[in-house]
Image (tube, rainbow, N blue to C red; front, side):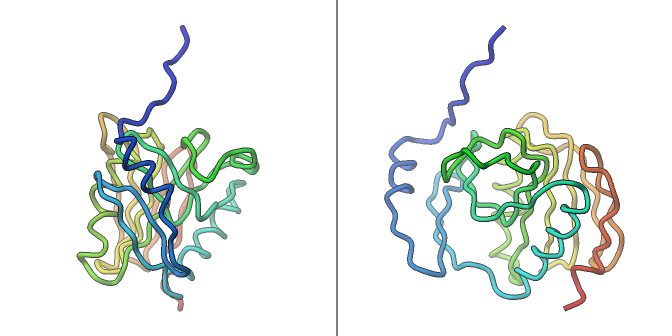
Length: 185
């Protein structure tokens, strides 16, 4: 039995508009919950956290890719990091199906409202795309949460710790992320 081709149910006019946007330097555009969202690129603290997670991911034999647009049945997202085996995206376009992705990373803003898309619509979008793990570093709540077991458009398991504590990451990555590494700036 052959699987049906992946066809995101996002309106084609929105996908075309997103592709046509000329984003100013220091900005990025995403399609989230049927809206085109243009936001500034991250600050230094945000990037420091992403680099620390990148180091941890590499210790587990994966690469953390940035500036990729992942296609989900719910939209098109630019995660802060996409963990996948080396070479996964070498022959793909700027926007891609999440085949081979093990984990996506989002690091929120320090402001609650600015992180709401990461906490809700993007979480559900990653689950709808069957991405096994979603790591959310919430700078507003000072928590790290790993979401796993994607089914029916959401994750059915999550574990949260305060930043500074150890977070158990489940399979398929499996290991302990010392979130103290994310607060040492």
